Length: 77
Image (cartoon, rainbow, N blue to C red; front, side):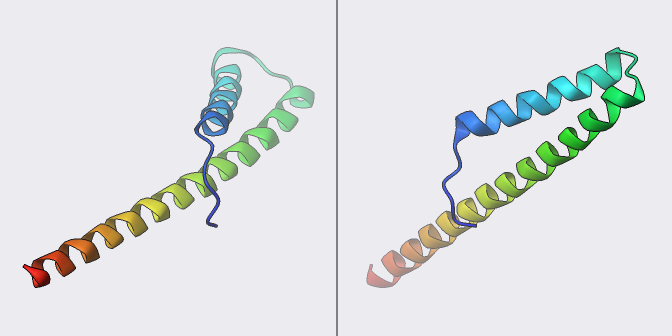
């Protein structure tokens, strides 16, 4: 997954998941309302995990590229 992550979308998704979590923590939710909310929460959590993994991979690639540049610079010096 080499898509650029949209920080706005990431924070919006996290905020929605946080709202769902707050509902479960602070309110009594009946089954009819709770099950769809729970499913939505799982979907959002999966989406966030995938995005964060992609971001982590991108950062690792950047660090690796930087290390290669530093190694090359050291050899040239």
